[in-house]
Length: 240
Image 1 (cartoon, helix red, strand yellow):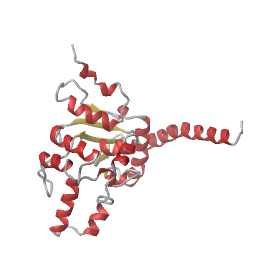
Image 2 (cartoon, rainbow, N blue to C red):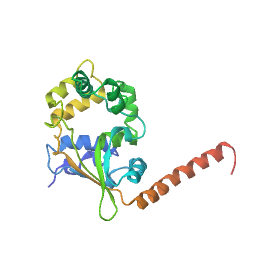
Image 3 (cartoon, helix red, strand yellow):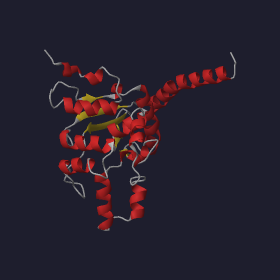
Image 4 (cartoon, rainbow, N blue to C red):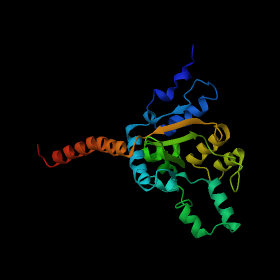
């Protein structure tokens, strides 16, 4: 008989995809039957809509490419800023591999991390859910014209190819440091130490369909919102 974790309580509670994947990444280390792959249907309607709206202009420019944090609507690097990345960025500036101006252009908002209250507010944001689920991912167009995102849910800590590699232990300590002790940094520190390493996390395979499919889905998903808002306006105006 499979354990209760084989289904996973995160599949019962309607958690945003980032929170679901985060919790499941730990549960899976106890029970291998816990969910270890995510598809488009695992995203909520709101998360899917934000993903479609973000990827469409990118696909128009190129059939394949990379999704970077500034590509997500809303914040830039503010809501994913952490002491480890800031330290690595400052080291690059100190070693004259980058200027402060270049760093701000490439990592806008990195030195202005969000507060704990902003983080709590972000927990219900589909944009933030995508940003911390997919992060910086690649996309491509297959032979049938479908837009595909392939990735894995891990914490990308301790990669040897990084210019300034860091260890999970160091990231964990920095998450609890005086400078880094925010809820986001603590959760990231715990994940870096106890969560899956690069390439070992749950598989993410999102088939978004063709550009035409995406356009139709956006229209279908936004129509109910527009209809509901119109009804609210008419009610406010006292119109039938």
